[in-house]
Amino acid sequence: MNLKKLPFPIYGDQHWRGKCPLESAEQITFFNQLRSTYPDTLGKLALHPRNEQQLRAGQHRGMIRQKAEGLTPGASDVIIPAKVAFVCEIKRQDHTQSKWQPGQVEYLKAAQNAGAFACVALGWRGACDALQDWIEMYG
Image 1: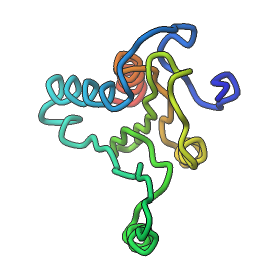
Image 2 (image 1 turned 45 degrees about the vertical axis):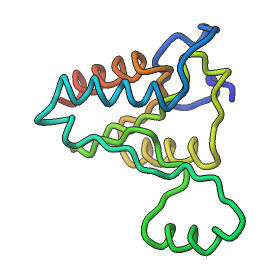
Image 3 (image 1 turned 180 degrees about the horizontal axis):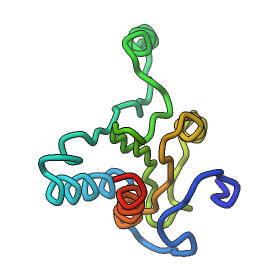
């Protein structure tokens, strides 16, 4: 994915290349930082919707039920409900090592169009920078 074509801010060094943690590790580190820094406020509100699922044989009916129950394919990695919601998709620090899942860009666009602070973060530090900007703008 060409990050320059995305209509929302990108946090982190887009030119950085090299060995880096997996997206899940970046996400875990971000949530640990968030919950230790803001344990009684943002740390309680922030969530990660579990939407990334690889379907195996025989799971189609289960996916239909999950969608009926509110599963939203493409939902971002970090969502903080607030007057102006924080919606952040975390990718690896070297974004060329990340994959975009179907619906992720569309979800971010929809969140932005609804008035949310929507962004992409490269690594947990990028996500922390995005959070700081959001706090300064809306907190």
